Length: 89
Image 1: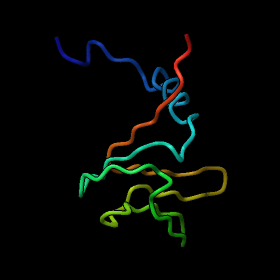
Image 2: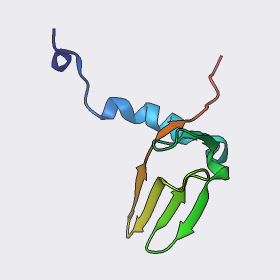
Image 3: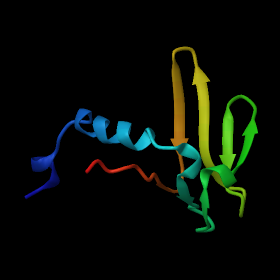
């Protein structure tokens, strides 16, 4: 059986994404796609310009890009991100 037989649309993913992004962002951890170092978001280096760029404190590779547009924010995550959220009993 193919995966196409068992899919949902992206709206089903939206609730999970909302829970993930509602966590404390400075404590989220990231594993760099280049050097494999693991750091909390708050340890990364932030640079401004036309947008915001977050860089790995070990190797300097891009971890995240954020661009604010009229009425929207565009975010690119790179590497593996670990967001810890409280689980309801």
